[in-house]
Length: 273
Image (cartoon, rainbow, N blue to C red; front, side, top):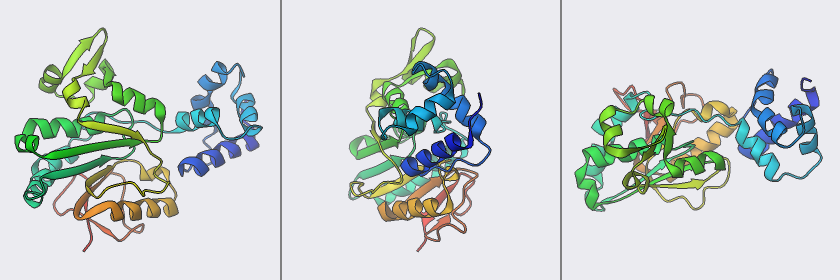
């Protein structure tokens, strides 16, 4: 049984209203694939019947489970490499020079999924910047999906996840084998604070940030929502702070408050002065 137009329209609206994400027309197959496990678990049999039940009840736990299932949680350790090379060679050294008096760094990995991105940042700080052991460095990491945040806090990854980007020397140094999986050392896990956060909500409690990682997120929003999120990023970034976007993302034509970092292939941006 395939989805009818009303069911697909309902899921599109539910997703956009509660997460800001835009589900394109013609993605019925994606809805069916992502929601089928929930439908079967709920004893509904088909995704159509599962959505019909959602439509008759107020937004609650089951609706948020559907929203989480529809979000894309693609990530890996040191993803695409270039951004992390720039972080190690340019961004952090510049911030150490600029923050020498305060000796604090505030870092935010937004839409962090299962945690590989903020943990990659944590390992860079620990491996290459011993001076920061005497600083107050806070790495915050957020996502809208509770399930992936739970996984991120546990720091437990399968072999396929480890094989995607984790250098062997860091695997040996910071991970312990647990059956067929790998557990990240507590000394790295303790460097990251995970919390649930919707990027389309108000950001009233966010402190000034030194750099924000917002990679491969904006592609799922319409232009208005992209502009709103980028404006909120600009407000929380310090004037000499940095923003990291995905390789396929751009601020051009969306928000003029940022400019790409010169001579950088990693997707780093500065606040435009």
